[in-house]
Length: 168
Image 1 (cartoon, rainbow, N blue to C red):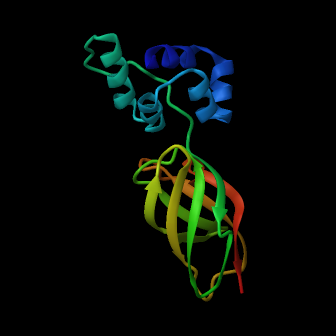
Image 2: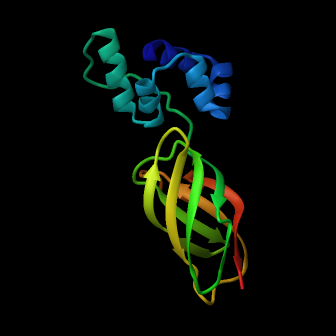
């Protein structure tokens, strides 16, 4: 039951650490249904609370949960390089991406904002984005950043350091 899972997750540091390391594995191990897993993946506090309330058969006006699933995390990008002066379409793999996510490449002060073409949220999240690599941008490694819909600052984004290389 989702209620039991969320209640235990709020108070059990080991379960929290396990969940941060392998959210899908923990949700399977804890016996969540596919619907419950999708609700947890959404990271939507209201949606999680509504599901718990439905399961318990009670009514609450305001969310009572104050724990959220982990922030999005990038595991890979493919292809992981592109040529200056060209466009490249990449697939960024990870966990806990959500609709409205944004993608960016960054090296120092150089920011290349991707045009997100699609976001898949489960079970293995992926973002497809197109980047226009200017002819005059520096070659070398760039960090890959994924921002959630409500995230604005780079320190809030999921980051894959040096995950993409711009070539001549």
